[in-house]
Length: 308
Image 1: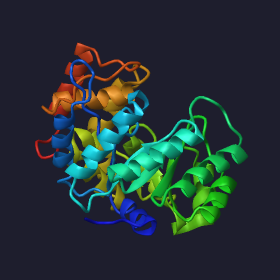
Image 2: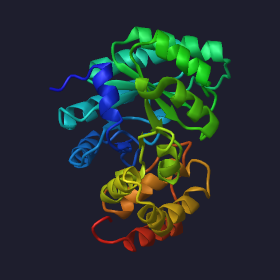
Image 3: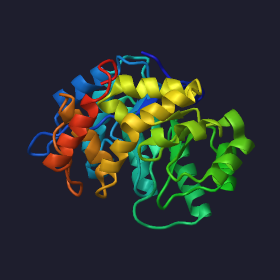
């Protein structure tokens, strides 16, 4: 079994496309572990930098701590040994530390640290939160900057100095000024991950800022398309990127933007449309309507067969 140190995990994550597998639910909304394991095996056949189990697209916010550990363990035991599996940690600091310990038990290779639950915090409080989680685990940690945990360049630089196992910065904000300041100060000390919803729309400009990878939700149901798009971005084939944006990504985002929470719901709809149903989303999310599912299905059907 491959054992990733924080340094080797940082390098691996930055070398390829990343994805957040959906979490499979049965009709009664219980976790469908068998279907989930089969899907991890399917996705891990592709060349990816890592898979983030029970992440945002995996509905971390709707899972109990025990379910999170089950999902992460299922991913870790179903993926090839050399495919890194990252687990989520979130909510308050003490709870996040418990999630980190559960990630170790489940066999995860690293942790994605989500924003604290609900409350706002200043930069000092956010820094203490990250430092406490990093000190609690030997695993590599990626911080997710979004919502009520938007980290400044000064804070990220401080954390990079104080936390040797801090390996990555995932941007869910889209602030180019902050991203530029972080990268120019830290360069390859961290791996930089594009984490905005439907990250493909930001992939090409972010590449110029040192963001070598991003998390693709589309990979769940169109892995060939997602990898082709990623390779076109890395090779700076602007015409190909523009065509793929026009043919699929931008129409896809128009459906996604119709309702709050559809950034996750549309991914599960894509799974259904491509014959890999992962079941419904859990409340408070809602599934796409039948006409919207049909619209997405027709959009996918228009793609070349090699990428659909």
